[in-house]
Length: 223
Image (cartoon, rainbow, N blue to C red; front, side, top):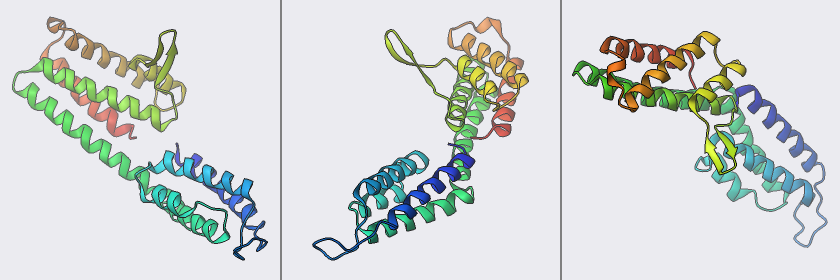
């Protein structure tokens, strides 16, 4: 989910919360202000769905909301709004996306350094396979960033999209240029040759350019 989409969605949930608080009354056996049940569950499910999608089920925002906002009482709704306000501040500052991007970049950097080490040691084929795998993983994460599906339905069930298809989908979504698409296609071709034992169809210098190209591509197209 993009930053703009996150901001728009959480604002929509705040509108629901305002409508919900407007229904508060003390007409119940516990003499505690309660809210409309139907609207409460709309607020709860919408909020949990949003927090799970943006932060994940193991994040404190999701855990706290799920634990503290269970029943249609005004105080629980107010607690939920407080959690959402904290989440909004984090989204507004771009912190959650910055962290995800940094973690991914760090992991991919480690793999590309490994590829370069293997190449320097004379293992061009292993280097090409690892670098190619890193590229494929980054393409998949870019699809997640741009809300592009990474699976397709076939007569035999659900299958993962091929990287070439995801590459094409990303260009259509405006994630990067057609020139980048052509580069990715050529890199995937080299990777496939390495993975299928066609070692004589490329040389060490091509793998050097391959690794360098992927490094630049990842830097210019962060997740």
